[in-house]
Picture 1: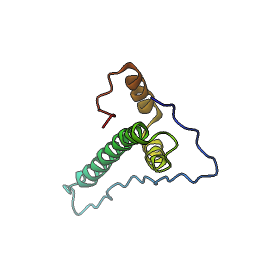
Picture 2 (picture 1 turned 120 degrees about the vertical axis):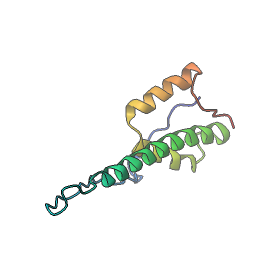
Picture 3 (picture 1 turned 30 degrees about the vertical axis):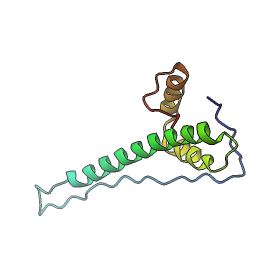
Length: 107
């Protein structure tokens, strides 16, 4: 597998702000459902995790199929670099090198 390409410092990196929102307290409704917003944030986090994984896999599939110099692969690279914690990508890189990565990257 190829090494991760160097990042051009002049190329903009897309980042998305993440805002935690909590339900306000209203004394008239002591039993109000305050878990709805938590459930929404949990779903948003799960979605972000899925996008992280999918962009990581798509990047490595793209590089395998087209090579590191294929410019459209960089979209996946920038996406997973902005979504994924470094510890995750380091672990996945180790799994790829060891040959026990849980996804097929050759198709």
